[in-house]
Length: 482
Image 1: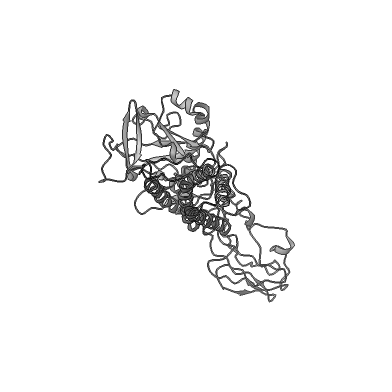
Image 2 (image 1 turned 90 degrees about the horizontal axis):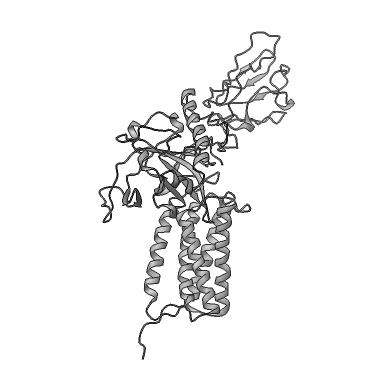
């Protein structure tokens, strides 16, 4: 008599995979907390996958099996749409993003659930293998789920669809609230007009002929202009006109000063706006020429020029020479074996110590985006500085607009004329047998596709590396694609 333990049926496999996918989606609920629709969608999906998986472990009725096929197929289909075109009717998922480890693992588990349930429905004998028990299946699923859940916790989405636990530059509140003196009583023209420092092109404070906002031809005494901007230094002019229209100095480099000296001519309106310089309206980085990186706070003209020059040369050189991974390979670049992350780096190791730095003619590393179809799209150059530079010795490329990072958590396996990477952790964690640590150097990306954190953005999570202690990871929302 055969006393071997019967392996899990397809339905058991499907149930365990569905529960695992549901746990990952439950972890994503908090990540998408600022997008109510996305959070609700992930919560509903998690509830279904975990609930169905638990039910399928104790009941094998046909309708339960087919329900699992339908529900998890919907999860896989939703993932594919979210990664290719975005889901337009769900706030927070309307913009397509490249696959990350957590969501890819959730989709893979949902696909296994579909396959297992479908097999249980149409050919239940296929997965009855006496030598395999459900224990290792559950253990492997648990390990994958734990890893993906941790990864999901490090991926945050914020007000514009993508927040990276970073210092966000250029974000503004479209409710036009003042940080001080927020007293805006509407006058007879409905002039509720707040003026925070902003780069919003829809809210530039210029001279205007709008009859509801005319500060050049107002008759003295026509109205009380309760138009406070951070102060209550009220002045009364000769016609009884209360001019509560004080403007503190603007801290926005793109907005002209709002100083209003009182008129000394009693025959002239007391509230003239002197002509000022045209405000700088930042341009979103669309990876097209010409490159315009103006409008970033604290960046000098020289820093802006250096940053624009590197981005321009990268946009010209990379697509012309390395549009495909085959072209990169022919030029001597080799993959470091990280395509599973959704981004594959190719490095030409002879260029890592050749005397050229931040030179688009000699890019040390090329980054390709791994699409859901398996196609690999050229995405960025990754410029590596030469040893023994550290993060305290990086060149002033673009001032506060650029941020270098490094990787002290990698070990490398020699592979002929190249190296294969593995993520281990920072020292003193030892490398696996056969792997070694390489000298750590600073590096920076320059993207040749639009990026939500601007042209110099780092990757997310463990792939993003480390910045200087105490610094937040930079996300440039002045030029970012969202």
